[in-house]
Image (cartoon, rainbow, N blue to C red):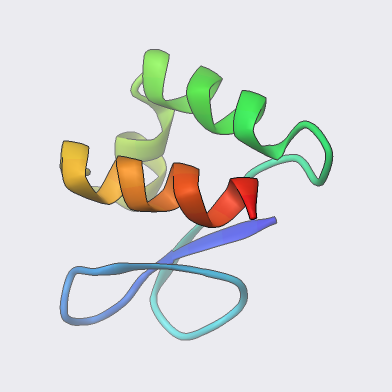
Length: 64
């Protein structure tokens, strides 16, 4: 699964323009997100901070 930082700084799930990071696919996607957050890999891959609000939205989206 791909996460993309859009030009406005928001994050989106799926392909699109902007800086991206790949996570493993379902059903482990939420686990992979948690691992990436814990290792700060998501911020490194997206080259910028990821707010707690954004992380919560991603968790909700990936669980659906």
